[in-house]
Length: 420
Ligand code: NAD
Image 1: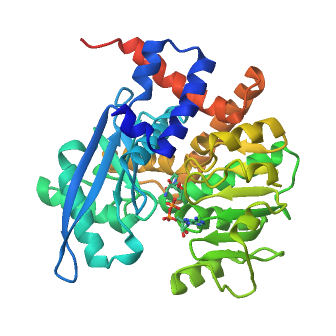
Image 2: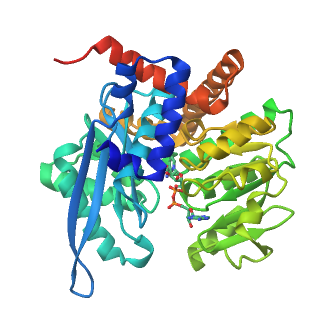
């Protein structure tokens, strides 16, 4: 199993970040091994009737990294590149993220190798329901609570709730988070991750003595995370000059109107050809001189060829794993970029997912204002803890964030002991 996981580039990245941090923390070989590898790695074949009458078999995965600190939590991704190593890497990062945020969860992730852009709504519903059915023995509100990720959304979660509720013979909203509001989703969940990316970026700007009003930003990815990060930044007075997605990249020196851009994306399927914008090479956009660069798309967007050319002051990792370890080393050596590591920057999503779960368990609901205020309080406290740890221990923000998360998990492992 170790070889299969390590053969995947993204898992290799997560493992190398872990090894480096374990060494920094001086973890014993025993605790290190127990923390590094996933507890459960599940693989499912999923036969689905397609619209043209064929039956196609898809492959789906769920990796539960650790159950030591509580139920596991993590999104479900629908994307052609999904494979078990990638899912395991994302589950590992979720583990450190939940621990860093001091949420009572371990990390998990799931995914299906498929291309949702090429599937009809009916095909996606049948695929989701089949996956949910296969997952049911392994998930639940006290065991593993999935949520949306790349290529999935509130509707996907609604199909999972319906499948689980039909099987259980009662309504079980607590089995997933990121649900529609009418199915007891939480106010504020849809925008939570992007809001957190924007909020932590403004905390970083203020540390650097830069006023948000008139500051500039580039956002890679205009899905759930990127679009809400862009919208919140615009509301804070930041000019979002560059935006890209799978269809291309666009530029406007004065900043884009994100509300109009969202409407354009809904109507046309992408950011390309948005009025009042110039097309720009997506790679060139990433290295423009701006205050904030927020990669909010896929892993490994910033590699060792791009890192020396970056001209941003704040690198806000909205996506999971957007910076390769080689690029990380270059950024660290340069010392002129304020990095907000992924496990901190995009933690708004899992934090409001936690609020949603708590509300579901209590059969109670909070207002959007209550949710966002609790979210900002937690993010600000964790951001301060991370930055002061890095200053005190003279380490990078990446190492500080992972060290705070991994130490929390390692301490629980040590205290619980080894069974039998
Ligand atoms: P999404 O599917 O809603 O959006 C992904 C966006 O990235 C789309 O606009 C797509 O066109 C764009 N994209 C894909 N490949 C690209 C490329 N090569 N260049 C530019 N753009 C590209 O997904 P999302 O939920 O916004 O997730 C984005 C990232 O944030 C992922 O790394 C995910 O794991 C992470 N994340 C998501 C959440 C959440 O709550 N949704 C929480 C934490 C972290």
